[in-house]
Amino acid sequence: MAEYKRSQRVADLLQRVIAELLYRRVRDPRLARVTITGVDVTPDLRMARVYYCFVGTDEEKAPVADALERAKGFIRREVGLRVHLRYTPELVFHYDTSFEYSEKIDHLLRELRHDE
Image (cartoon, rainbow, N blue to C red; front, top):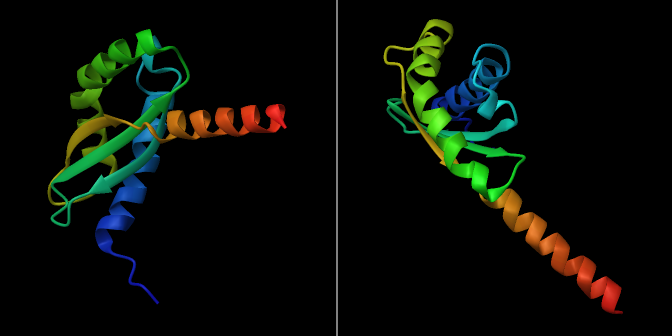
């Protein structure tokens, strides 16, 4: 059986905490439709890559990324208060393209079924 690493446990905890912060504490309306899809933490727990997606148009991607960058300090401080680690991880936000890819595949499959 594979070992459940500490970094993975911390990543799961960070995902829950950041998602809750975005839902309850961050007041930026651009972030209302953002979903945290995953978090990867380095083995030394000093950096966390936070993956997100949102419901919206392509034109809204840049403002959402900007809003996350602006809220990063607040989110990191709140994470530090809620998650008791020696060092609060540096947060780096990345847009998760896997949902767009799955929608594209789903669309192609529907077209194939429609053609048959």
